[in-house]
Image (cartoon, rainbow, N blue to C red):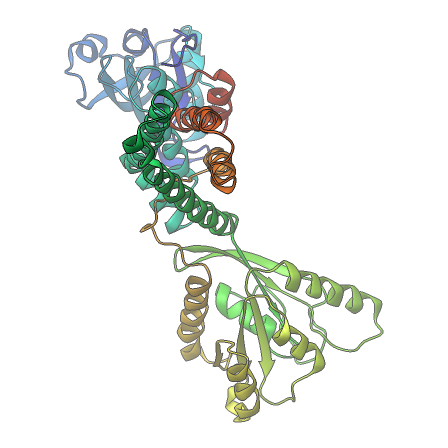
Length: 460
């Protein structure tokens, strides 16, 4: 068990977002939560007598002049049957900032303090209401930027991640038992035949972790947003395509060349994925210093992009700049624009030869937008396919660091071909067990706990 000093004071926080809204929820937790809230209500005795986990309407009063601040609803929870394991009250009020501030001001005057980041979930963890993996999953559910991120957090929240980690830990423990048997009974041939059993276990876990780390790298790309620069020569229709995808006139479109001289970006959600779309300066021969700076940026985006979207017009021959993009090893897709000019055959053959997915489109046609969106979504999923059929346990940086640490230790053991001595192998595997304990939150490292909950939002 983690031995961290528990603060016993009562805390309060706004559990919903700041700013005017239809409703707001205040969360109060601690020994004095119920009694303190009761003192603020016109119907004090009715609130105290009400059954736990039932919602009723009350009048919240100003502490000084006893005038009404707001008509609220409130639910009380008795320890340990609450989110935090403590006495708790959740107040739902009108969502105007002035009202929320008035309610908070009254509560703070009654020796309730503002909660720190993640303090409600931290108390839930310390009071045994949830394990560390589940607590971390809550934050990931809140911060999830795409469907895969949220799906992975659900896996962890449901306990599947913990189950898998415990299975792997058990295999390591069994391996240690077998190795220690070899140390104790070196002359027993039957015991020596068990060597392939534990080496197979170690190889299996190493392979799984390798796959998980690879998936985590894909998740990192998904979580920060998949960077897709739209590139091509001037007047190819890049800005028009950008506007089509984001569904409003974000950038200027004009028949004159060089309209876009700097990168313009928008972040959108497409097929459940966060996309960072960038309209770049056209690649053309110019002596204009401003255009040259824009072109330099375009090439930088080509190097940094996750998927390069090349736009090439049907009415012009392929250029050297376009060929350089086509030959680049980066993930890329293409759209042949101005297909109403019926001159797409040559470029279509180039993309087929280079195995580059492409479509033909007219950006002025509203009919073509669904086709463009579907094409882009398909390309993203083919390039960054992650399924939860894998073990799916690495939900954040802490998990990734521990997985890499465990994998490295297993790799060292396996690469030495068991020549480092079985005593050393047993010692190293015990260190792996310590890493699994840290992963599961079964260690007493207060710094780790503090770091985890400092990332939470206030009110959670």
